[in-house]
Length: 72
Image 1 (tube, one colour):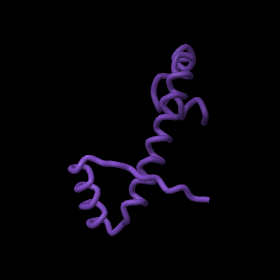
Image 2: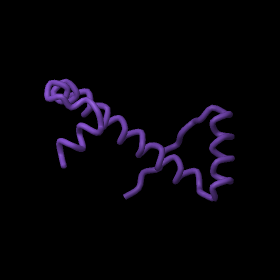
Image 3: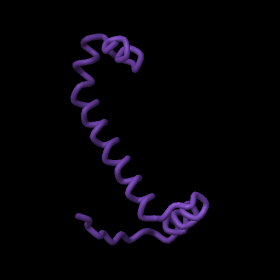
Image 4: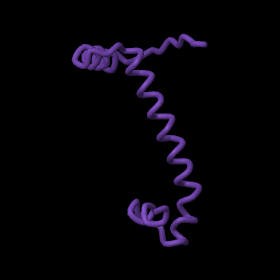
């Protein structure tokens, strides 16, 4: 099932979206869906990092390299 959502954008953002859609050959709806998906994923990631960051730090995991070493 799909839901239609109407979004109001500032004029400059709308113009930038139009230009981007034209230069990439993509439709605006797909660009907005992909952008929202990335935003939601990043928001969830930040929440996990905030929750687990202190625990990881106590274990000496402070960098991406430390994470890869820990799970390898």
